[in-house]
Length: 118
Image (cartoon, rainbow, N blue to C red):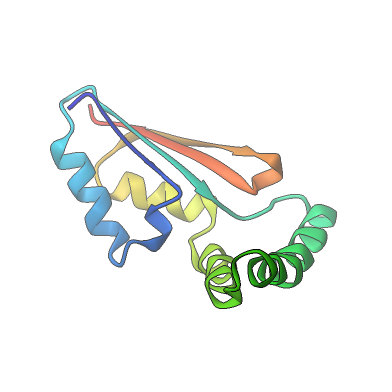
C-alpha cells in the first residue's frame, strides 16, 4: 500500500498505538501515512473562544438540531482527550514512521499529521 489515510477517526480508536503500528505494517517502503484530526488550538486568545464554543455552543446545537446533546458533548470531550499535536507526532514516530511532521489548520482546530515508512 502506498498510502494510508484516516480523517476524524483516530481519536475514537481504543488503542491508537496499535492502529499506528498496523498502519506502518501495511504500508510499502516509501509509503505515506496521513491523518486529519480535530486537535488542540494553539493561539491563546482563540483558545478561550474555542473552548467556550466547544463546551457551550456545540452541545446545544446538537440538542437543537439532532435532539442529541450527549453525542455532541462526547465529540468535544474526545477532542480534549486526544493527545496534543507534538505528542501525537511522537506516537507516530514511535510506531516506526520517519520524517514525521504536522501542520495546524485554523489555529490548531484541525491538524494534518504525516509520516513516511522508509
